[in-house]
Length: 413
Image (tube, rainbow, N blue to C red):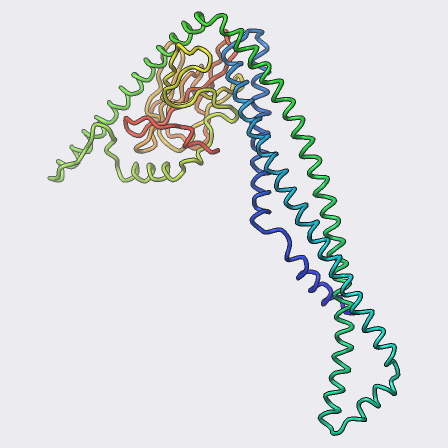
């Protein structure tokens, strides 16, 4: 039988024509996204369960339901893509199996013809007579080479048949695995669709219930917005004062050396160390850790109508993150605590990162003070829980000078 290294080499060559690296990468990306979405759904579902314990039909419950519906729709879409990719893989494998089967049949026919020919000329005497009947030495040498090549060709054909058979068996095993995977994906998809339908039914029921007390909710939301506006005004005032002080210090330093400092009322005058910290903060955009270990965005950045109470417009200078009761708040980056304040009985913390400021509000406990140096993920306080709604929610903001930024763009996705 032909040697193993050649069979292995032929097999590798046969299998190398498989599914493209791009599709394999697509599959890996889809699976990673699916895992992340499933984790978010599990987390939101847990928060939803905790919120429902207070037996009140609340906006917090609706926010979480909306989030779950959005994430589950995304999960089903991802599963659709995985099924489609698996179908492509199955079609490719089916085509490969047909091709390998045809190749094996052709090789077997070729080998059978060679065996028949060898049988008819099986005598060693005939081979030597074929060589000795040569007209000269060169012809004899060529005939000897021909006989040797003929034998090599026979052995190579056997090796090709064995390699094709091995590749075929591997393709068949892979096809079975892909069909099993497709069935599992379709089963999971059906389960997720069932859960999605239940959530949409609960969503419609809750929306109808909340609309019955729309006036009461509108009053609550307007009161909440008023408090938020006062907090925002206080934060902006603090930042403006810090900018004024930084500009004043820069101008004094420049004047001492006979120079003039270029400053702006909208941005900090930075020291070399603060410039380096700012650059480091900027380079981590989209990669900053979340200010809570677990949580879900319940209200996005900017101005938008409330999802239920259409008469109320929500203006959010940051994002709201709903999380578990007694959750710790963490600094999202290295920096210095620039302010710790209280408004309406709840605390807030401001941390400078050079030109940037991060704000953490709606806290019932703080564990840092003004002037403290903090590091990434260091615990700085605890999120307060609204006992009436059973909601634990952090308000998180990012500023560059006096410009408000969307924090969702800065946090790791």
